[in-house]
Image (cartoon, rainbow, N blue to C red; front, side):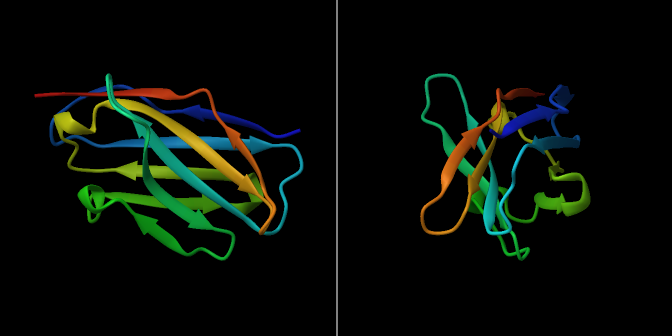
Length: 118
């Protein structure tokens, strides 16, 4: 069984920065993709950024140039560095793991609240 534990959410002013962390425990396969999603009140959950086991990254257009996803394989931890935050970035941020290759098992963290004040 895999557990994902997020941390780092907070209330910050517009233009500020935050770094979210997601620590994974359990059996993590060598082929995997980790991602950050977010869900704002009244909206659907949306993909923010992904990183594969070989370090390939991809981002939602609206966060490109402001957010950076990275990972520490030794710690099984993925990070989301968020700079130049905007009020529209306000959401609960969730860590996601697709464990395995073509036939993967998906896991979710409990979420961490990010609130950006204007």
